[in-house]
Amino acid sequence: MDEAIKILREQTILCSRMPALFDELIKVMKNNSPEVQEPVGKIERAMRELSANEKKAQEFLKSVNAPSFAEYLSAQKKNIKRDMAEKLLKKAAESQQRIKNQLEMLKVLLQSGKNFIEFNLNILARTSASETYGQKAQRESQRTRRMFEANV
Image (cartoon, rainbow, N blue to C red; front, side, top):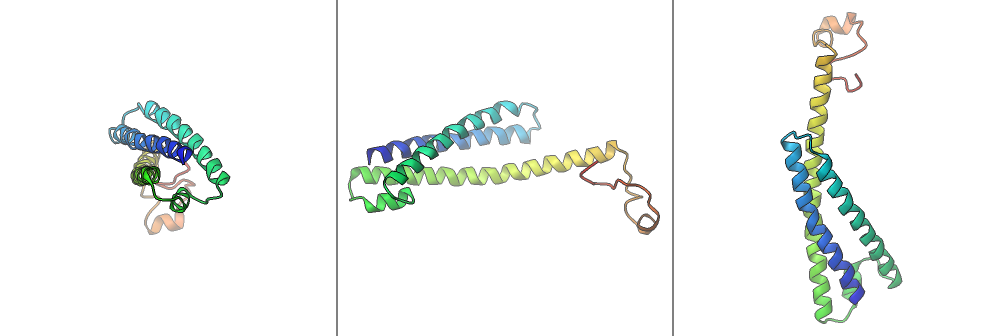
């Protein structure tokens, strides 16, 4: 039980740091700042630590023949250590849910940035809308590029 608590405590600490790191990255992306490398580096380091913790957790669960910490804890007798481990598991799950929500926001920001870049590349390539849309364009257009085409 002590090893489970140690692993869960480490996981909870790592998971609770991640939302702040993602908030920093979201703020940088919303401000269109070029300083993305620092927050991404911090997130990468934290993710490596979290991955190492996950390996420890899987090895522990394999050694006790349990598919998850929840099932392992439910099989233990009720005492203070079990209660502590359950609270740690709950905190880690809450942090993971917050991380999941932030990842969805980051996906939206990245898609928006991608669309912005594609639009500007079409402008730089001088792709005109008149050859792309309309009846005449459908019949007579000789251009190989189309406006808003991703591969310009």
